[in-house]
Amino acid sequence: MDLDVFVAAHNAEWQRLAELVRRGGQLRGAEADELVRLYQRAATHLSIVRSTAPDPALLARLSSLVARARAAVTGSHNPAWREVGLFFARRFPAAVYRNWPWWVSTSAVCMVVTGVIAAWVAGSERVQATIAAPEEIRAMTRQGGGYESYYSSGPASSFAAQVWTNNAQVAATCLLLGVLLGIPVVLILWLNVLNVGIGIGLMTAAGRGEFFLGLLAPHGLLELTAVFVAAGAGLRLGWTVIDPGGRPRSVALAEAGRAVAGIALGLVCVLLVSGVIEAFVTPSGLPTWARVGIGALALAAFLVYVFVFGRRAAKAGETGDVDAQYAGDTLPAAG
Image (cartoon, rainbow, N blue to C red; front, side):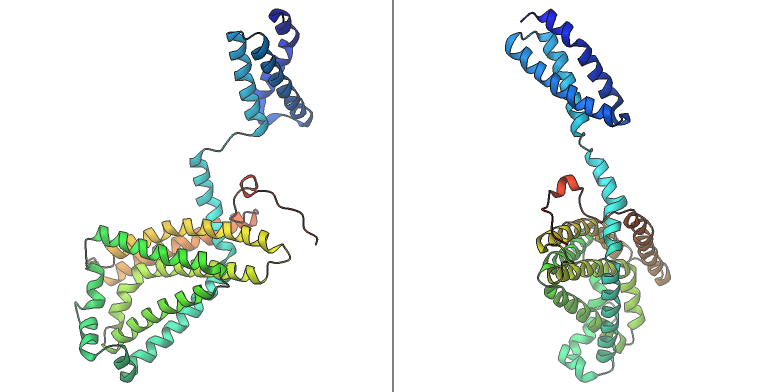
């Protein structure tokens, strides 16, 4: 093959392809088709040159051109930092917002049940006697006792890591086991509600109920909200098994499952914040109003994040699912 003749015959096509690649996303429909056609021809030319006349300079030119054209045709990969930004700016808050009827209802029911248990325990010495011996209850509820000393039982940093890990496991369990018709989620919620209700009831019976709530509120406002979000999403996943909403059950579960996995990742960060508050703010020497105020601000920031940014993203069509290019193709289903 005469290399000079080959270059002269196709040089105009290569220059045109390079021009289209430079313009990128500004191409009109016909120009986009032309880009694809010229990219395919340039790839063929590169193959011909490699096999018949491997001139180093021409190979370098065509290889670079074909690589840039391939990126323009197929789309370049988004940087990891951009995906992380999109997740926290749109996908996570939208997924939490879309589940709000489930987790708000869950939180309301749990709060009512907690109050009933606390009142039952506080008002009945017989119930208290079934929980622990009187000496053990006094040891837990007295000043500096078990309920109070728990929050300063170790170095703040290691305590924060322990609390974070435990709460993240509870949230992940609620989310991932929700697929079992939501039954494990109900059991986990019951255990948490029972423990909190008993604690409030015993401390109230000892005349230290307000003090105990002052210990719970700084971190508990955000922590319990995160657990309720996880439980609500898990219950919704369980309901998807029962009622996939007119879609094939496998498709509905795949979409809901990917959104739930995203919620789990986002809640890890939320629970990190509550763990830091529990380790550094709850046992601090700050007055109760200041500690509770910090917890209230953290909760308010989360709710604004969900009901402002999440609502906006959901209204724009964000579902919390991954991009379609990562989700895979699905077969059409009859309506």
